[in-house]
Length: 359
Image (spheres, rainbow, N blue to C red):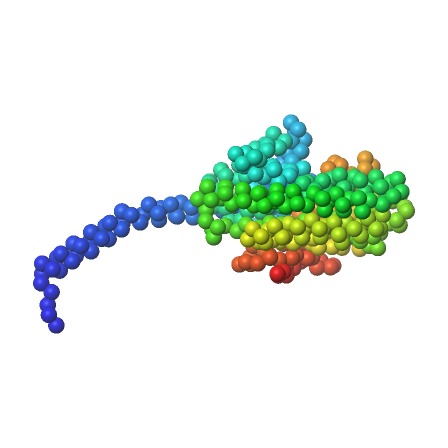
Protein backbone atom coordinates (compact mmCIF):
# COMPACT_ATOMS: atom_id res chain seq x y z
CA UNK A 1 0.00 0.00 0.00
CA UNK A 2 1.34 3.40 -0.97
CA UNK A 3 2.27 5.58 2.02
CA UNK A 4 0.69 9.05 2.38
CA UNK A 5 3.25 11.86 2.27
CA UNK A 6 3.65 13.79 5.48
CA UNK A 7 2.62 17.08 3.88
CA UNK A 8 -0.60 15.48 2.60
CA UNK A 9 -1.41 14.16 6.09
CA UNK A 10 -0.80 17.62 7.53
CA UNK A 11 -2.98 19.23 4.84
CA UNK A 12 -5.71 16.66 5.40
CA UNK A 13 -5.65 17.20 9.16
CA UNK A 14 -5.79 20.95 8.66
CA UNK A 15 -8.70 20.62 6.23
CA UNK A 16 -10.58 18.36 8.61
CA UNK A 17 -10.00 20.82 11.44
CA UNK A 18 -11.26 23.64 9.23
CA UNK A 19 -14.38 21.74 8.27
CA UNK A 20 -15.13 20.68 11.82
CA UNK A 21 -14.39 24.16 13.04
CA UNK A 22 -16.74 25.59 10.43
CA UNK A 23 -19.47 23.24 11.50
CA UNK A 24 -18.75 24.12 15.09
CA UNK A 25 -19.49 27.72 14.21
CA UNK A 26 -22.69 26.89 12.37
CA UNK A 27 -24.22 24.10 14.45
CA UNK A 28 -24.16 25.45 18.01
CA UNK A 29 -26.60 28.30 17.24
CA UNK A 30 -29.33 25.88 16.12
CA UNK A 31 -28.32 23.38 18.76
CA UNK A 32 -28.51 26.02 21.47
CA UNK A 33 -31.96 27.08 20.30
CA UNK A 34 -33.17 23.51 20.48
CA UNK A 35 -31.62 23.06 23.91
CA UNK A 36 -33.30 26.23 25.12
CA UNK A 37 -36.65 24.94 23.84
CA UNK A 38 -36.10 21.65 25.63
CA UNK A 39 -35.20 23.44 28.84
CA UNK A 40 -38.43 25.41 28.92
CA UNK A 41 -41.28 24.19 31.08
CA UNK A 42 -43.70 22.04 29.14
CA UNK A 43 -47.29 23.26 28.96
CA UNK A 44 -50.84 22.36 27.98
CA UNK A 45 -53.16 25.21 26.98
CA UNK A 46 -56.95 25.21 26.70
CA UNK A 47 -59.01 27.69 24.70
CA UNK A 48 -62.74 27.92 24.27
CA UNK A 49 -65.96 28.51 26.17
CA UNK A 50 -67.55 27.52 29.47
CA UNK A 51 -67.50 23.81 28.70
CA UNK A 52 -63.72 23.86 28.98
CA UNK A 53 -63.18 26.84 31.30
CA UNK A 54 -64.49 24.77 34.19
CA UNK A 55 -67.72 26.62 34.78
CA UNK A 56 -69.85 24.54 37.11
CA UNK A 57 -66.78 22.98 38.74
CA UNK A 58 -66.34 25.65 41.43
CA UNK A 59 -63.13 27.04 42.94
CA UNK A 60 -62.84 29.81 40.36
CA UNK A 61 -59.64 31.65 39.65
CA UNK A 62 -59.51 35.17 41.13
CA UNK A 63 -60.88 37.76 38.76
CA UNK A 64 -62.94 35.31 36.71
CA UNK A 65 -65.99 34.87 38.93
CA UNK A 66 -67.59 38.25 38.38
CA UNK A 67 -64.95 40.68 39.60
CA UNK A 68 -64.89 43.75 37.34
CA UNK A 69 -67.44 42.12 35.09
CA UNK A 70 -65.27 39.11 34.23
CA UNK A 71 -67.47 36.02 34.38
CA UNK A 72 -65.08 33.67 32.57
CA UNK A 73 -65.50 31.18 35.43
CA UNK A 74 -62.10 29.55 35.07
CA UNK A 75 -61.91 26.79 37.63
CA UNK A 76 -59.00 25.20 39.39
CA UNK A 77 -60.96 22.01 38.69
CA UNK A 78 -61.07 22.63 34.92
CA UNK A 79 -60.22 19.60 32.81
CA UNK A 80 -56.95 21.09 31.52
CA UNK A 81 -55.64 21.09 35.09
CA UNK A 82 -56.51 17.41 35.47
CA UNK A 83 -54.49 16.10 32.55
CA UNK A 84 -51.07 15.73 34.24
CA UNK A 85 -49.38 15.94 30.85
CA UNK A 86 -46.99 18.85 31.39
CA UNK A 87 -45.21 21.02 33.93
CA UNK A 88 -47.78 23.81 33.58
CA UNK A 89 -51.39 24.10 32.47
CA UNK A 90 -52.97 27.30 31.18
CA UNK A 91 -56.71 27.88 30.97
CA UNK A 92 -57.57 30.70 28.55
CA UNK A 93 -61.19 29.62 28.02
CA UNK A 94 -64.02 31.93 29.02
CA UNK A 95 -67.70 31.36 29.71
CA UNK A 96 -69.84 32.79 26.94
CA UNK A 97 -67.02 32.91 24.39
CA UNK A 98 -67.76 32.53 20.71
CA UNK A 99 -65.38 31.65 17.91
CA UNK A 100 -64.71 35.36 17.26
CA UNK A 101 -63.23 35.57 20.75
CA UNK A 102 -60.60 33.00 19.76
CA UNK A 103 -59.29 34.74 16.62
CA UNK A 104 -56.37 37.15 16.86
CA UNK A 105 -57.31 40.81 17.12
CA UNK A 106 -55.37 41.55 13.94
CA UNK A 107 -57.60 39.07 12.11
CA UNK A 108 -60.98 40.31 13.31
CA UNK A 109 -60.99 38.69 16.74
CA UNK A 110 -62.75 40.51 19.54
CA UNK A 111 -61.84 41.16 23.15
CA UNK A 112 -64.23 39.61 25.65
CA UNK A 113 -64.94 40.38 29.29
CA UNK A 114 -61.99 42.75 29.43
CA UNK A 115 -59.52 40.27 27.96
CA UNK A 116 -57.69 40.09 24.64
CA UNK A 117 -58.73 37.42 22.13
CA UNK A 118 -57.62 34.00 23.29
CA UNK A 119 -55.24 33.41 20.36
CA UNK A 120 -53.40 36.62 21.31
CA UNK A 121 -53.14 35.34 24.88
CA UNK A 122 -51.75 32.05 23.56
CA UNK A 123 -48.77 33.67 21.81
CA UNK A 124 -46.65 34.68 24.84
CA UNK A 125 -47.29 31.31 26.47
CA UNK A 126 -46.14 29.51 23.33
CA UNK A 127 -43.05 31.70 23.21
CA UNK A 128 -42.10 31.26 26.85
CA UNK A 129 -43.10 27.62 27.37
CA UNK A 130 -42.72 24.40 25.43
CA UNK A 131 -46.36 23.80 24.55
CA UNK A 132 -47.06 20.11 24.04
CA UNK A 133 -50.83 20.26 23.58
CA UNK A 134 -53.40 22.87 22.60
CA UNK A 135 -57.05 22.07 23.39
CA UNK A 136 -59.89 23.88 21.62
CA UNK A 137 -63.56 23.58 22.55
CA UNK A 138 -65.71 26.24 20.91
CA UNK A 139 -69.00 26.41 18.94
CA UNK A 140 -71.92 26.15 21.39
CA UNK A 141 -72.31 29.89 21.96
CA UNK A 142 -72.23 30.56 18.22
CA UNK A 143 -75.34 28.37 18.24
CA UNK A 144 -77.01 30.10 21.21
CA UNK A 145 -76.59 27.32 23.78
CA UNK A 146 -77.84 29.27 26.80
CA UNK A 147 -80.91 30.53 24.93
CA UNK A 148 -81.89 26.99 23.98
CA UNK A 149 -81.64 25.89 27.61
CA UNK A 150 -83.77 28.82 28.75
CA UNK A 151 -86.34 28.27 25.99
CA UNK A 152 -86.79 24.59 26.87
CA UNK A 153 -87.02 25.34 30.58
CA UNK A 154 -89.71 27.94 29.94
CA UNK A 155 -91.51 25.54 27.62
CA UNK A 156 -91.76 22.86 30.33
CA UNK A 157 -92.95 25.42 32.87
CA UNK A 158 -95.69 26.70 30.54
CA UNK A 159 -96.72 23.32 29.17
CA UNK A 160 -95.35 23.04 25.64
CA UNK A 161 -92.37 21.35 23.98
CA UNK A 162 -89.36 23.15 22.56
CA UNK A 163 -87.42 20.75 20.37
CA UNK A 164 -88.74 21.53 16.89
CA UNK A 165 -88.12 25.26 17.11
CA UNK A 166 -84.75 24.92 18.84
CA UNK A 167 -83.46 22.34 16.36
CA UNK A 168 -84.42 24.58 13.45
CA UNK A 169 -82.51 27.46 14.99
CA UNK A 170 -79.41 25.33 15.58
CA UNK A 171 -79.42 24.01 12.03
CA UNK A 172 -79.80 27.52 10.62
CA UNK A 173 -76.80 28.72 12.64
CA UNK A 174 -74.52 25.76 11.81
CA UNK A 175 -72.84 27.13 8.65
CA UNK A 176 -71.66 30.33 10.34
CA UNK A 177 -70.55 28.39 13.42
CA UNK A 178 -68.58 25.99 11.24
CA UNK A 179 -66.84 28.88 9.50
CA UNK A 180 -66.02 30.39 12.87
CA UNK A 181 -64.47 27.11 14.03
CA UNK A 182 -62.48 26.82 10.80
CA UNK A 183 -61.00 30.24 11.39
CA UNK A 184 -60.35 29.49 15.07
CA UNK A 185 -58.31 26.43 14.06
CA UNK A 186 -56.38 28.50 11.53
CA UNK A 187 -55.71 31.18 14.12
CA UNK A 188 -54.31 28.73 16.65
CA UNK A 189 -52.02 27.28 14.02
CA UNK A 190 -50.89 30.75 12.94
CA UNK A 191 -50.00 31.67 16.52
CA UNK A 192 -48.05 28.46 17.07
CA UNK A 193 -46.20 29.00 13.80
CA UNK A 194 -45.39 32.60 14.76
CA UNK A 195 -43.98 31.26 18.04
CA UNK A 196 -41.62 29.00 16.10
CA UNK A 197 -43.43 25.65 16.25
CA UNK A 198 -43.78 23.21 13.41
CA UNK A 199 -46.97 21.13 13.38
CA UNK A 200 -44.96 18.10 14.54
CA UNK A 201 -43.76 19.84 17.70
CA UNK A 202 -47.13 20.00 19.45
CA UNK A 203 -50.47 18.22 19.41
CA UNK A 204 -53.65 20.08 18.55
CA UNK A 205 -56.96 18.61 19.69
CA UNK A 206 -60.48 19.84 19.04
CA UNK A 207 -62.83 18.56 21.73
CA UNK A 208 -66.58 18.14 21.34
CA UNK A 209 -69.24 18.59 23.99
CA UNK A 210 -70.56 16.14 26.59
CA UNK A 211 -74.31 15.57 26.70
CA UNK A 212 -75.55 17.01 30.04
CA UNK A 213 -79.01 15.39 30.07
CA UNK A 214 -80.23 11.80 29.73
CA UNK A 215 -83.07 10.61 27.55
CA UNK A 216 -86.50 11.19 29.07
CA UNK A 217 -86.98 7.58 30.16
CA UNK A 218 -83.88 7.87 32.35
CA UNK A 219 -84.96 10.98 34.25
CA UNK A 220 -85.63 9.98 37.84
CA UNK A 221 -88.51 12.41 38.46
CA UNK A 222 -92.00 12.05 36.91
CA UNK A 223 -92.47 14.20 33.82
CA UNK A 224 -95.27 16.25 35.36
CA UNK A 225 -93.72 16.56 38.81
CA UNK A 226 -92.46 19.95 39.98
CA UNK A 227 -89.53 18.00 41.43
CA UNK A 228 -87.98 18.20 37.98
CA UNK A 229 -87.71 21.92 38.55
CA UNK A 230 -87.37 22.47 42.27
CA UNK A 231 -85.37 19.38 43.31
CA UNK A 232 -83.52 17.93 40.36
CA UNK A 233 -83.07 21.03 38.23
CA UNK A 234 -84.00 19.27 34.98
CA UNK A 235 -87.27 20.91 33.86
CA UNK A 236 -87.65 19.27 30.44
CA UNK A 237 -90.33 17.20 28.81
CA UNK A 238 -89.18 13.68 27.95
CA UNK A 239 -89.41 14.38 24.24
CA UNK A 240 -87.22 17.47 24.67
CA UNK A 241 -84.68 15.54 26.74
CA UNK A 242 -84.62 12.91 23.97
CA UNK A 243 -83.98 15.66 21.44
CA UNK A 244 -81.17 17.17 23.51
CA UNK A 245 -79.44 13.82 23.98
CA UNK A 246 -80.05 12.17 20.62
CA UNK A 247 -80.33 15.06 18.18
CA UNK A 248 -79.04 18.41 19.44
CA UNK A 249 -75.76 17.20 20.89
CA UNK A 250 -74.94 14.97 17.88
CA UNK A 251 -75.83 17.79 15.49
CA UNK A 252 -73.36 20.12 17.17
CA UNK A 253 -70.61 17.58 17.80
CA UNK A 254 -70.76 16.01 14.33
CA UNK A 255 -70.50 19.45 12.77
CA UNK A 256 -67.37 20.15 14.83
CA UNK A 257 -65.85 16.82 13.87
CA UNK A 258 -66.47 17.51 10.19
CA UNK A 259 -64.62 20.80 10.44
CA UNK A 260 -61.74 19.27 12.41
CA UNK A 261 -61.38 16.48 9.84
CA UNK A 262 -61.44 18.99 7.00
CA UNK A 263 -58.68 20.96 8.71
CA UNK A 264 -56.58 17.91 9.52
CA UNK A 265 -56.91 18.35 13.28
CA UNK A 266 -57.51 15.50 15.68
CA UNK A 267 -60.97 15.31 17.25
CA UNK A 268 -62.07 13.94 20.61
CA UNK A 269 -65.77 13.06 20.95
CA UNK A 270 -66.88 13.16 24.59
CA UNK A 271 -70.65 13.26 24.04
CA UNK A 272 -71.12 10.04 26.04
CA UNK A 273 -68.44 10.64 28.68
CA UNK A 274 -70.97 11.58 31.39
CA UNK A 275 -73.48 8.83 30.66
CA UNK A 276 -75.29 7.65 33.77
CA UNK A 277 -74.15 10.75 35.65
CA UNK A 278 -76.12 13.38 33.71
CA UNK A 279 -78.43 15.75 35.53
CA UNK A 280 -81.41 13.83 36.99
CA UNK A 281 -80.26 10.45 35.66
CA UNK A 282 -82.09 7.61 37.39
CA UNK A 283 -78.86 5.83 38.31
CA UNK A 284 -77.26 8.85 39.99
CA UNK A 285 -78.11 11.32 42.72
CA UNK A 286 -77.71 15.00 43.49
CA UNK A 287 -74.30 15.92 44.82
CA UNK A 288 -74.41 16.33 48.58
CA UNK A 289 -72.02 17.55 51.26
CA UNK A 290 -70.51 14.06 51.13
CA UNK A 291 -69.87 13.71 47.40
CA UNK A 292 -69.30 10.34 45.79
CA UNK A 293 -68.02 10.17 42.21
CA UNK A 294 -69.57 6.76 41.66
CA UNK A 295 -73.13 7.45 42.75
CA UNK A 296 -73.53 11.21 42.23
CA UNK A 297 -74.10 13.40 39.20
CA UNK A 298 -71.21 14.80 37.17
CA UNK A 299 -73.24 17.74 35.87
CA UNK A 300 -74.46 20.95 37.48
CA UNK A 301 -78.26 21.05 37.50
CA UNK A 302 -80.26 23.98 36.13
CA UNK A 303 -80.40 26.88 38.53
CA UNK A 304 -83.85 28.40 38.70
CA UNK A 305 -83.41 30.67 41.67
CA UNK A 306 -84.37 27.74 43.87
CA UNK A 307 -81.46 25.37 43.32
CA UNK A 308 -77.79 25.98 44.02
CA UNK A 309 -75.25 28.03 42.07
CA UNK A 310 -75.15 30.74 39.41
CA UNK A 311 -77.61 30.45 36.54
CA UNK A 312 -74.83 30.37 33.97
CA UNK A 313 -73.37 27.25 35.61
CA UNK A 314 -76.44 25.25 34.56
CA UNK A 315 -75.81 22.02 32.63
CA UNK A 316 -72.02 22.25 32.79
CA UNK A 317 -69.76 19.45 34.06
CA UNK A 318 -69.05 19.74 37.77
CA UNK A 319 -65.67 18.87 39.28
CA UNK A 320 -66.30 15.16 38.70
CA UNK A 321 -67.28 15.75 35.09
CA UNK A 322 -64.18 17.85 34.51
CA UNK A 323 -61.98 15.10 35.92
CA UNK A 324 -63.67 12.54 33.69
CA UNK A 325 -63.12 14.57 30.53
CA UNK A 326 -59.60 15.45 31.66
CA UNK A 327 -58.90 11.72 31.79
CA UNK A 328 -60.23 11.44 28.24
CA UNK A 329 -57.81 14.15 27.14
CA UNK A 330 -54.89 12.29 28.70
CA UNK A 331 -55.90 9.04 27.02
CA UNK A 332 -56.19 10.78 23.67
CA UNK A 333 -52.84 12.52 24.07
CA UNK A 334 -51.17 9.17 24.58
CA UNK A 335 -52.28 8.10 21.09
CA UNK A 336 -49.94 8.90 18.24
CA UNK A 337 -52.75 9.94 15.92
CA UNK A 338 -56.41 9.51 15.08
CA UNK A 339 -59.84 10.58 16.25
CA UNK A 340 -61.37 9.02 19.34
CA UNK A 341 -64.51 8.79 21.39
CA UNK A 342 -64.42 8.53 25.18
CA UNK A 343 -66.86 6.89 27.56
CA UNK A 344 -66.98 6.12 31.25
CA UNK A 345 -67.40 2.75 32.92
CA UNK A 346 -70.74 2.09 34.70
CA UNK A 347 -70.27 1.60 38.42
CA UNK A 348 -66.84 3.22 38.44
CA UNK A 349 -65.45 6.69 39.06
CA UNK A 350 -63.93 9.21 36.64
CA UNK A 351 -60.63 7.35 36.45
CA UNK A 352 -62.25 4.47 34.57
CA UNK A 353 -62.64 6.21 31.22
CA UNK A 354 -62.09 4.27 28.00
CA UNK A 355 -61.07 5.39 24.55
CA UNK A 356 -62.12 3.99 21.18
CA UNK A 357 -60.91 4.95 17.72
CA UNK A 358 -63.41 6.49 15.34
CA UNK A 359 -62.90 6.89 11.57
